[in-house]
Amino acid sequence: MPVHDWTRVTAGTFHDFHLAWIAELRRALNGGLLPQGYYALAEQVAGDIIPDVLTLQQASGATDAMELHDRSAGGGTMVLTVADAPPQVSLTATTSEAVALALRGRRITIRHATGDRIVALIEIVSLGNKETEVTLKAFIEKAAAALHEGYHLLILDLWPPGPFDHSGIHAALWSLVGGRVGSISTDRPLTLAAYEVRAPGIFNAYVEPIKVGISLPEMPLFLAPEHYINVPLEATYGAAWAGLPERWRKVIVG
Image (tube, rainbow, N blue to C red; front, side, top):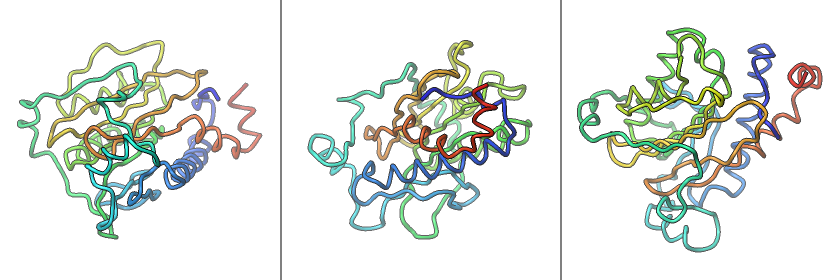
């Protein structure tokens, strides 16, 4: 299913779709994508952050990094390694150690009420996240703080750059955490970006620029350094789209 032009509808209509997509992502993650000991919850309060989908690891009895490595070579849940199966994206980048040291103080503490360990966050960008300078700054700073706290991140931005994110959400976040922003694709203004925490303050970005009218690719969600699962964005997006009222589907498709 191709990505739609969400600028054709109200913010409230996208919010309805947003909630449905969150539910489908959670369903897919808990339905067999995540390895044993990991699970996903929607819209959980974690410190000052309320991510769309929070991936957690049980405090005890969960799969550790070594077991993830073993599982990537065996059966069961398909946990992939960067070395054996690099994420299939157009752009990759890494922050430098020197910049990481300079920015080390910029972090907040995020905890979940269950006491289980937070592993990764998924965020679907809403128009409100980039509608004003204040809301954009808040979104970017909280995303950066999550990375500095050690949480892997997947950001799905189906909105074109606006007056406050001229180069897009990824460029704004990547520059804040000390990364170098390369050339921006003008013919593919929407962005899917996965962030891997390699070490404290050292991040890898896996970026796929997209545009309205093309299918969503799978994107990596990291569970540990070098270890990730592929998230089925197209299937979950399509399931969420199927539940959107026909009145608004007609407006979007024209």
